Structure formats: C-alpha cells, structure tokens
Length: 260
Image (tube, rainbow, N blue to C red):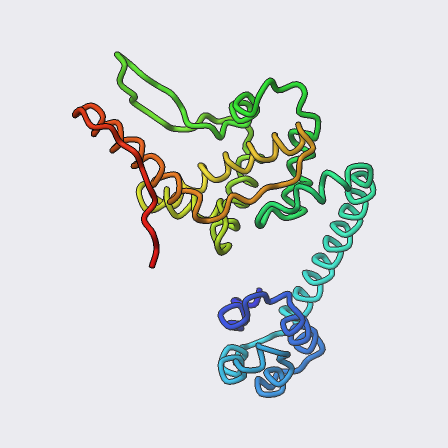
C-alpha cells in the first residue's frame, strides 16, 4: 500500500512497524502530507536519516490509501495481541520446566524462543532416544551416508523434521556471530572449507547433540572455548609425527620448549 502511494518508507527504516514508523503512519492516516513534518517524527537513530525520510515521504496519498492503511494497521494490532496471548500461554505451560530452560539458555545464542520450539517439537524427555545420533537421525540433521562400492557418493541430509532443522540452523547462524566460543570456531572452520550452508547444518547438529546431553544428564553447559580445534589439531599433529618417527626406528620423547 505504501509503494502504491509512492511512499518509500521501507527503503529508509529497517522496521516500518517500529516506533518511528508507527508515528509516521498514524500521522499520514490523520491527513498529514508535509514530508518535513513527517520526517521530524523520527526517533533515536532514525532521526539521523531525516533527509532520506523527507525524500521517501514525497508521495501521493489519497483518501483510499488512508482508509486501507488504517484497516491494515488494525489488522496488525489484532495479530500482535493474539501473539502476545499465545506467548503468555506458552510461558505458563513451560513454568514446570524453567530450570531446564535456564540451563539450556547458557548455550551461545540459543534463544528462549528456540528452546520453546525444541520443547514443543521434540520434547524434554530424552529417554526414548538411545543416544544423540538417534535424535539427530529423527530430526534429519545428520549427514547422509550414501555409499556404493565403499565410495561415499552423497552427504546430503535427509528430510526429517522441517521446523526443528530450521530453528537449529537459525541458532547455528546466531552462534556463528558470537566471539571466542566453541560453536563459532566450529562454524568458521567448516565454512572456510565447505561453505556457510554446510557449516550452519553442522553447527545445528552440534547444538542438538548438546541439547540431548544436557537434558539427558542434567549437567550445565560447558564451554570448550574457541581454541579447542587448534589444540585438537596440535595433538593430532604430535601423534602423527611421533608415530612416523617411531616407524623410522626412533624413540621419541616430547618435551615442551621453555618459553623465554
């Protein structure tokens, strides 16, 4: 409707239903047409975009546009109120599991909404699953294992549970933006070799495995730190080189160098 009235509000504001957007839309519905007056209603960071707002608000708003904008805003308000009621109902139903939710919330960027979706779709009782691999297989977030003649032909994940996979990938992408965490390091390590999509699926799988073990054992989240993989690489290199020298007939004793 805004585009039809030649109002380019969405080109300037990140969220047209934010406070600035709502103030401007309410004024347009009341009949205000002066772009400068409308732009002066910008709040906080949006105020720095005043000049761009003036240009974006040079439109042609008719009475028909105002009527339909009013109806659309009433509809949005109705849906917002319904969402609030649902959020309150979900919160009340999950009160008995607040301890588990607080524990899971310690995972980097695993939001409460993500936890609520995981609770709704796969539950909090992990006893039906013998191990984390069975849960990952049910969800469909473990790599495929299509082989023929001993040669792996595909690692594509199976269909599984669409909603759980989507929220795990979303949580993985959020975790990738954290600083100095195990999940972020895992994402960057895989993304460098195989791309961001596969990295997000792999980290989503790790989040599900952590979710399983935390609920299964009741233990809190333990951060492995960002240097976990570099330390792992160092240990692998030590073992590989030691075995190589031993095969050549040497007796190897590793002694850390003294740091001066």
